[in-house]
Image 1 (cartoon, rainbow, N blue to C red):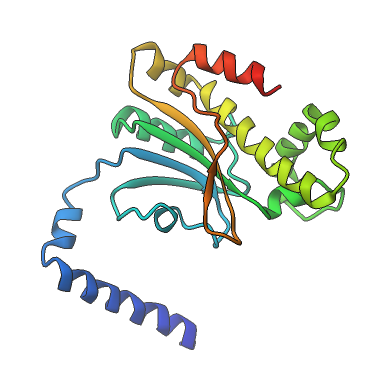
Image 2: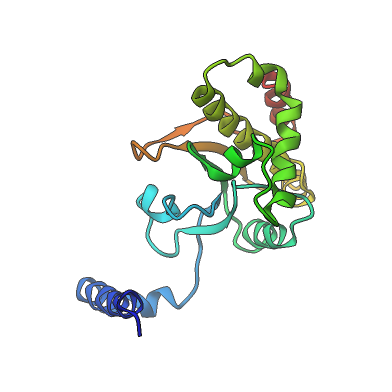
Length: 211
């Protein structure tokens, strides 16, 4: 058994002991069910832990993660998570959270093949094509990269708003708001990109504003 593998097993035991020392019923209460108010759609990057970033406890955030925090309409994994969160858990907020320095977005800006992920990156490349005039006007490469990260997050919020799941929730008057955030790896702070949508009317207004 490798030292690393043994270490993570030992860490689990210590975490259980620490949790029980603070609350003897911690795991019993946790096992009774979950009522999180939030669904987090984030990047798979190991440096972006959803719960820790917002100081949330287990049971407070329902999480879906993939490369570059994408909302792809043919992704049954994402759609299943979204459907359960909206229609069963009745979350009130869905946050799409990307991060500066995202490897998936960076790869989509280039033409090199990086393997099977090329098929996933095609969705991000399509977004660059939609916003190429704006992005190509940014001469500094780092600034352009950061701007594309933000564009990608906004587009995923729009994609989320157009799913039948979210549309259905809004149609029956369900309290559900979508948000777009970007996380700074070098600061720890999140920035609200001001793409907060809670109805079709707001979707039309925000989408036109950011074209």
